Length: 243
Ligand code: NAD
Image 1 (cartoon, rainbow, N blue to C red):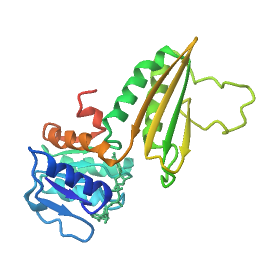
Image 2 (cartoon, protein in one colour):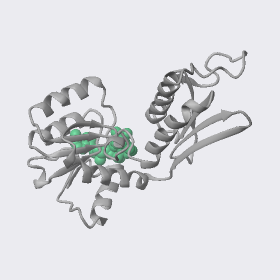
Image 3 (cartoon, protein in one colour):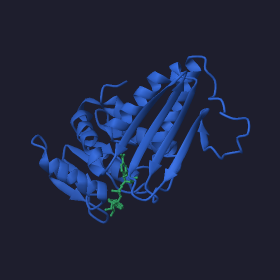
């Protein structure tokens, strides 16, 4: 295993997690300005750097036949398309891009998808530290999107407004017809709640990431599984057997 972005917060955490794992060996740590070369002979690379550097780093690994587990954000459709082109030239090489490595966050999405068709009323609340740049979070948007798709399949439309006096936007954004609220507060890390309201009952799904260690079981699961997933995989759920 080698880590790119090894001096960063996530990369450092990955290095510690790999060193603590009996079945994995850390052979290389790379960061900005380092020559990636032959990637220190690693079989798998974990990449947590910055959005503008990640596509080049991942292409370097794929060109050398090395599987990659990627946590860096910013993989838009253009970047994914270009990576698919690179992978097509290297059949057998696998790249896993996971916007969220917290297994609990992935399970909330799955459970929310299951529950969606049973409740007319649903709202998503995501709560993060104030330094988070985007709102709503990618995970909340994806959760809402999955709920919206499940509702559509069940013949339920957009979630109705609770009041006819809903001043535009005051109750948060809507993603695929589902209200999503963003809270930015000191002391928070990464949290998500999905509230389903029914006749005389409420179902709450909640996940809390208290620190970066919450991502490590997912990262290591990706590292162990990537050899069986050639080509491009987007989303941890696909290597956890949840699809
Ligand atoms: P960070 O700023 O602490 O670390 C980034 C590291 O990348 C730094 O050490 C920096 O020097 C290095 N870097 C910059 N340019 C580089 C280059 N060209 N080649 C190699 N390394 C380079 O950031 P972080 O908190 O560790 O987050 C890293 C990325 O992971 C961000 O995009 C963040 O949004 C994402 N992230 C994803 C998840 C997930 O579950 N997928 C979780 C947390 C963070």
